Image (cartoon, one colour):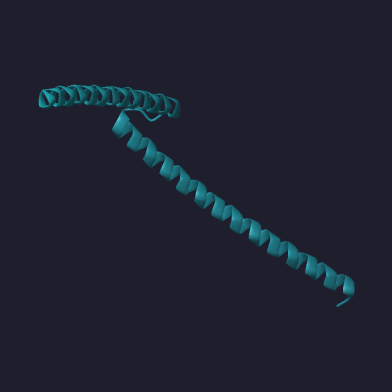
Length: 101
């Protein structure tokens, strides 16, 4: 075999190896895509069951609504605790005043 023929064989082998690697990547990518699509479908079904919606924009709006509601409830709880502390302070002050008298 001449050096030119050996070079051609090496080129063919290199191309074949490159082709195999690309084919493997394609198969892996197709598998990853299939798994991602299945996961997305499951998550959409779960969102539909839990929230009655499964569209991303609607879910984002629902999430913001939930966050706003939580912030409102947290503020109300904080205010209630402040009122309780204020009442306790009044009671303690009244009790201390009667003890001193």
